[in-house]
Length: 344
Image 1 (spheres, rainbow, N blue to C red):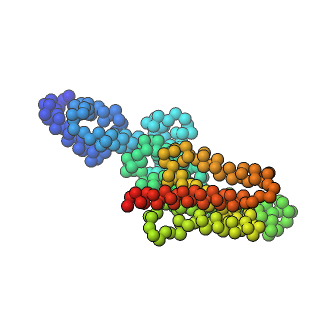
Image 2 (cartoon, one colour; image 1 turned 90 degrees about the vertical axis):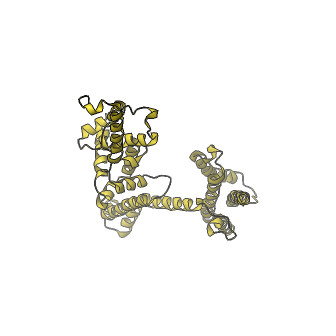
Image 3 (cartoon, rainbow, N blue to C red; image 1 turned 30 degrees about the vertical axis):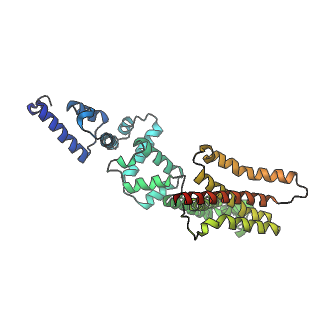
């Protein structure tokens, strides 16, 4: 640039610098962060009076840097640009970048998703490289791939990609069980037995069944915590806890305490979780997962204490838990009405 006379004039230099920045904002060429800093310094645009939007300039720096870091196919160069030293991390980063640059294809996605850890690895890599701004990744990154893997890595909510990959893994496990069932039956009983094969398939499907129950429970919790309007006609969701408690108490009165607890324990957890979620924002400790886990574990502890000292008990364990669930449900309903009255 020192050999360009038109840049010796300060006015022309400033106009050229602004024109160059406008072109950079439009085209976002790949370049390292030091290169952009050098350009700004040469054109005297590296100060507060240059008229930059700080957020837009920060985004430009991040987008050009990411485009430069991820544009190469060589694993060693990519690792050097990302400052990765471990050989396993270099291979992983190269594999993730290549995957995200390919078009979205279901066979490839389902194959990669067979390993439940891959979605988390991809999401963590994307967040780390982009400083939690995946929208600034270069256009070479397939946006459908990016959105799918980030949604599949969600742990706080049930997403469609998470269900798809989990269902595919469970289907693969079922197929594997059907293929191995004859061999397992021959091994355990010395002959081909339909009963033994079904037992073997059932044992292999236990993790899948637990996963399905966890997803169903997570969907129920998400549905129950969803905000609702305080109107004269309340939804079925508002009376879910009383209905479960009533059903559990009735079953307990009929001598089916175990089946009653199957209804009462979820009702207690839903009522307490909803109260914490809506009204305990000032108490961060109450909203922590450890406290909720301790509260859930307190149920069998309380059961053991009551059974240890039971004589002529007036109320059953299920009735106590149902009363606590109704207490949390009533407190939540009361606070909702108070907020509705204040808003009205």
